[in-house]
Every structure is written in C-alpha cells, then in structure tokens.
Length: 608
Image 1 (cartoon, rainbow, N blue to C red):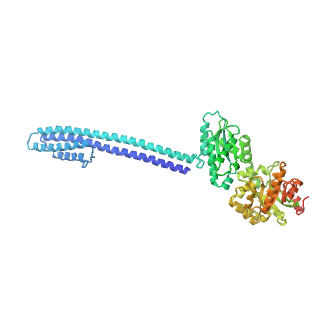
Image 2 (image 1 turned 135 degrees about the vertical axis):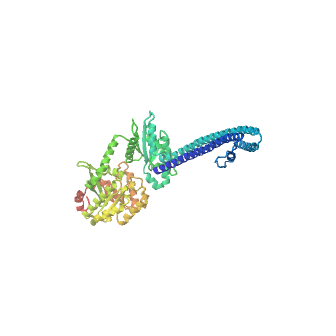
Image 3 (image 1 turned 45 degrees about the vertical axis):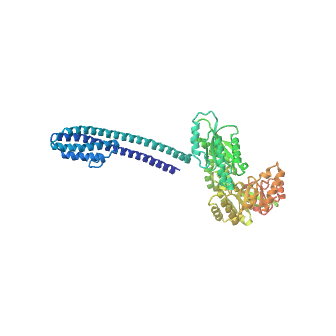
C-alpha cells in the first residue's frame, strides 16, 4: 500500500512538472516571438531613417548605390521574412498592404533618383520622400500595435493555460486523492472505514464539545470461521456487508465505525440502557431480512465496550476496548464486557503467566495428573486420562481452567500439549502400560492440531520413548470439530489408521449433530458431565443419553460418560449400555505417583 502511495506521488510530480514545462515553453516562444517583433520594429525605423538620409545625399550630389541595395534587401525581407536580415514575416493584412505600398513608392523614389542624376528637377523626389516618411512612420506604428496585440494574446493564452491546467490538475489530484483515501482508509469489502480511519474520525468527533455519554464498542461474530467453512466464503462476505450497513446506522455518525480483520467491527455510539442488546437485535433482524440462508438463529456476537470519560488518547481507547472484547470472547456467546481497571490487572496477570509458562515448562512445574476410566459393566479400570496441573508457586496450585483458555488464545498451548505428550509417553514407558493394554487419553487443542508440524512432532516424541500409537487415545473437544478443515480430518483419519484411538471430548456442550459423527474418524464419544449433574430434567436426560449411546453404537463408536459420582449414576449408565465411565465414584484426578501406587499395582482387578 505504501509503495502504491509512493508511485502515485511520483506520478503527480511528473504531471505537475509537465504542466510547468509546457508553460515555460509557451513563455520561451513568446519571448522569441517578441524579440522578432522588436527586430522588425527596429528595421522598420531603419527604413524610415535610411531613406531620408539617402535622399539628402542625392539632393546634395552624394550618390550612395550601396544604400539603395541595402534598402532593397531590407524592404524585401520585411515583406517576405526572407533575406540576410533574418526578420520574421508579419502576416497582418494592414501591415502587408503598407509594406507593399512603400515598396511601390520606393521604386518611384529610385526612378526619381535616376532622373536627378540625369539633371532633372529634385522637386518631385522631395515630395515623394515626405510621403514615404509618413508611410514608414505608419508602418512602424502598425508593427508596434500588432506586436502589442500578439503579446497581450499570448499573456491571456498563458494565463488561461495556467488556470485551466492547474484547475484540471487540482480536480484530477483530488480524484486520485479520494481513490487513495479509499485504499488507505476504506475497507474494500464492507465499504465502511478501516480501523486507521476510525481512529482519526473518532478523534475529530471528540474534539467537538459533547454532552452525550459516548462509548466505543468492538464486536465480532461468534464462530465466524465455522460459518465460512460450513456455508462458504460468499456467505461470510454477505454477512460482513449486512453488518456494515447496521453499524453505519447505529454509530453517532456514518464515518465513526470500522471493520478490521475478518469480522471485527468498531463503532462510536451514544450510551443507553442495553445498548449491545439493541444493536444485536438490529443485526439479527437485518440478517434475517437480507441473508439468503436461514441462519440468523445460529448467529451470536461478543461485545467489548469502553465508556469514554475525560481526555484520553484514541490508542488507549482502542487498547481498552480490545481488552474488554478479548474477555468477552472467553465468555459465553452474546455477551458484553465493559472495560474497568480489573481487566488491566487481569491483563498483567495473563502476561505474567505467559512469561512464567516458558520458564516453568523447562523446570517441569506442569505436573502430570491421571484420572482412571472404568468399564461400566464390571467397574474394572481400563485406562486413564492425562490431565495437567500447574505448580505456579510454592503456595499456588492452578487448575486447567485458569490457564488453558489463555494459552489457547495466545497460541502458546501447543508447547504445553507436546510437553504433556512427553510426560505421558514417559509414564507409559516407565510403567510398561503397553503390555497391559492400558490406554491413556491425552487432550490436544485445536490450535495444536492446526500446526503444520503436528504429525511430525507427534511421532518424534513417540519414537523417543518407544511408545506405540495403540497406547494413546487422542481427545479433541466437540467445539474443536466444528468447522474442521479437510486437511485436519485427513490427519485424524491417518492417525487412526496408525493405531491411535480418536475421541470427542465434552460431547453435548456444543452444536454438533449426531449425523456429523458418521463423517468423522471417531472411536470414542465422551459425554459431558453436565448431563449427569442436571437434577431438574432427569427423565429427559435419561432419554437423551439413551439416544446418544444408541446412535453412537450404531456407528461402532464406544461411549464414555464423565462426572460419574454415585453408584446410582453408574447403574443408570449400565442400564443404558454405556461402555465406560469416569468420575469421583472411582477417583478424582491424582498425581502420577499416587496413580501408580493406587491403580497400576492392582491392574486387572475390579474396583469395588
């Protein structure tokens, strides 16, 4: 974009220079022409004076034939513009008539000179010379008048050229400037300002005295990538354009809004009760009305807001609304988070966690915990799930919910995922779990799956510890499978063929349909613990669990249910033909040493 701007600036300089080069050319031509006119005026005066001198000589018996030849050549040059005097030809009709009249009288004067030399009276020559002098004088005035007229016309033409060319240049420059502004400050897809223009427009608006309570909002579409993947990018583009129209209407003025990135929108608005609900309603109504797909009910938005108080730099406003929006994204859909000081404190804490993460990975302060899985029919331990705990400091012990979302948001989760894979493989190798057909499941974030070297790094670690894929179960969350790209699906299919078990974790918390399972390489379905913990809809929950288990089994998919805390729940799962269970009925997650002493020594015996 900067290169384009530089090219256009160079282009402007070239055009402006061309205008002035032409102007200078006109001036040079004008100067040359006026020098020519001055020369003609000068020699016209010479004709007048030289003729009088010649006649005086003739009248006093001092003939001068050289002067006669000189005047012959001069008059011919003045008439035709050709001759040794290098005079320009003046095409003015009045001037040409006068010069021709003078040439006729000159011929008469030369005849009278011959007569005087032959002894005739000089009276007629004297009379002719007076008339000739008057004609020569008129000719000089005619040339001067013509020269002045030409000069005036050239000046007028020059001024007209300058006004016209500079005016045209200004119009052209403004047109190009508008085009450049569109490139620099207008989002090409939505047609509304970009973030740079938004900042400038908000500053200009805030410089005016405002009695209103103003807020800056930043929002985006939840799961926009999933919508693009599911319905195509044409739908995504259509949504962007629809939302841009609404944003332009609800902003305090049409240019106090912006689109940035894929689906981030900004606007300056007058604060009112339930502002984000009001905007969200307008957005949904517009999508219902204008979108070709009936998807309005599946769309939600996450809002971050900042209430403007006092004098504050625009960059600080944007940073604060970004922070609020970031926190809104980590909450449920259709949420708004207003910036306050606690968010800044939270940001500092998050930054500290990110910095400490790298150091603590090296110092192995992320600990391996394991929670047993059991066969529902026999309550025999058949495997475990690898979980992580963080020894953040001597007295602070962090659970995954307090750092996993942050690491996913910042993209650092892949380091922790591979670290936990190493810890798990080392544990499998140390305790010879492969020999007992004891499988350990490990969670991989969607962020990690999308890394280009995921498969390569996975097998490097397995080879390092001499662990076979059949000892591991790869868990991905239900939210992660929404919108999985074809390359990731092919990757999971490949891993399954290599011997890994593929499991969908937290099933029932997202928006996946059961029919989606038939198109994915899935071996195990893990039902979220929320089903068993719901005490208000037990009958409906049983029906739903039975349906999920039945459909999964019809697809040759095993089912494990989380959150099994009582024997009654275990009996219910057994009655519904659920395959496996996991929960506090058997054990909470415990560290690797406790798991070894409590379960591995008694592997193969039923847990009572």
